[in-house]
Image (cartoon, rainbow, N blue to C red; front, side, top):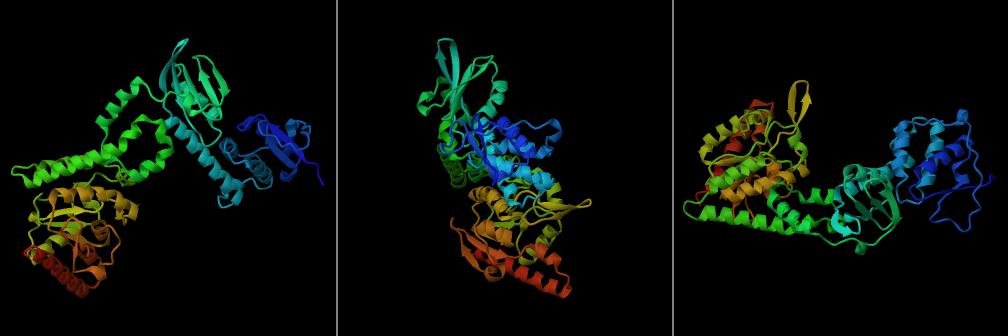
Length: 465
């Protein structure tokens, strides 16, 4: 049985020490199971004394992909106590399988990749959510920040803060260690507690006032915000304490404004709608805005008794910036006319306001929105309802029905029936006019068109009750 080799690294983030030892051990053919990795801060009392490791000759040095060096540099900062052994095992396997990193399904590679991703995320969080607070010491002004990293990233992040805040004297306190910059040199100190950092400073009141003035609840997505900025970081950031009340106050003001506009003579429902439309033009609530030409908002009288909700803009709607102007819109116009409904008196919109598509050559082919995209855009639909307050809302197709009712619905089962909505209006479900355009059989298409017209007549009849 081969003798065990014990490698003691200088600290939990000693990437360079691990690299030198791992390279030497692998060049000597030492198997992963024959190496015990430990750090100077937490040695194994029962381990043998570290064996002498001779540095390999240059000719015996290993060659590894650059991607592995980058991967190891991040993963070795993870808190997992097995990280050194896992990376060494991967290094040894790479000698026999140079393309090992290409196999993302390999359990070892997948685990290391997950560790590296977590470390990179922690590095980003420290850069994004660390907040300095102003203090004074014997040498004058000093800024102090408190942060609680999940992994061993503090030293690795030092260069970023030196470059970013080179002109400041600052200290970063963490439970593991502290960094102190005097304008020329970074010094390390022992770990600290939250009580060692100031709770606030005079600048924070100014910052909170500014943050409250620019806060826009229409742009905020709670789920995405919590994913990118978990609540564990909120205690370090003065502005986050304002977020819940700012959202609640803004929504309450908006509802009061809309209610006043609809109930008082000379109210400004039209102005409220224009404000919403202008705000929606800059919507980034889901990734669809990145490829679409523009936001396609609803249109029609803000006093409309009927609201027609489609799925999403098509190619022509995306270019024109108006809902239902393409082939499906022409089909809808024809059906509304046959049903005795004046489209000009109805409010027409879509569940999703940006065009989702796939490119096929020069063509842009419609792609169905997913549940996340529908939910992200539902905020705009709900604001439209607050302004228009329609008596009857017609959901054209399954996507629209999901937005109107807040849940998946089966069109065949729910079609042609009245459904009470939470705000007191009535919901009505039918097919999307694009469905009629896709029917290959002319007789079937004609039959389904007449049924669609009857559905619209049924919805219009509810207005006369």
